Image 1 (cartoon, rainbow, N blue to C red):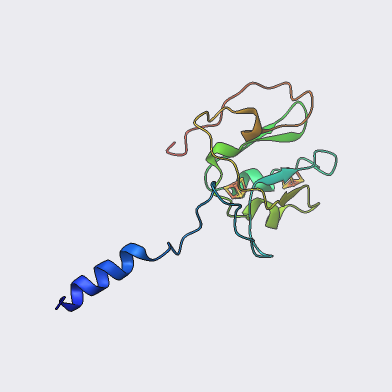
Image 2: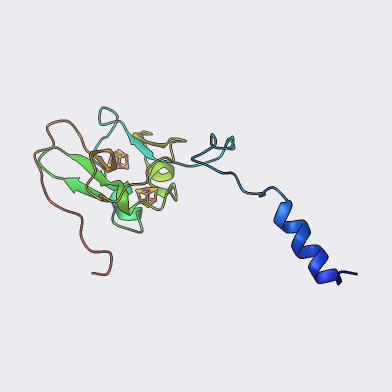
Length: 127
Ligand code: SF4
Ligand code: SF4
């Protein structure tokens, strides 16, 4: 007669996993308040730098010659603070979370105004 622990082990061996098998299966539906990739609308941006000040990871840098911002999304925590403080809603949070890449300079992870005119890299968050 199997001991209780063996019964549990064999039961779990044949059970289906509780977790989603993504990317083999489609991602599970996400909630209304889910935060994904930030979206930046340069036309709404007034260059106030509130987002630069509030960002905890220095994802956002200010481009003085354009009075716009550039975002290195590879550093983003998707905390949503930049979208919260932006007075013109130039930054909003999308539901796009499929951002995995081994290249932190992947073009999908760099959000910049057109004709940005700046190649500066983000500052270290430990400075
Ligand atoms: S969501 Fe948070 S971490 Fe990402 S850019 Fe905005 S303030 Fe920075
Ligand atoms: S807070 Fe909004 S308006 Fe101000 S610099 Fe950032 S994106 Fe532009």
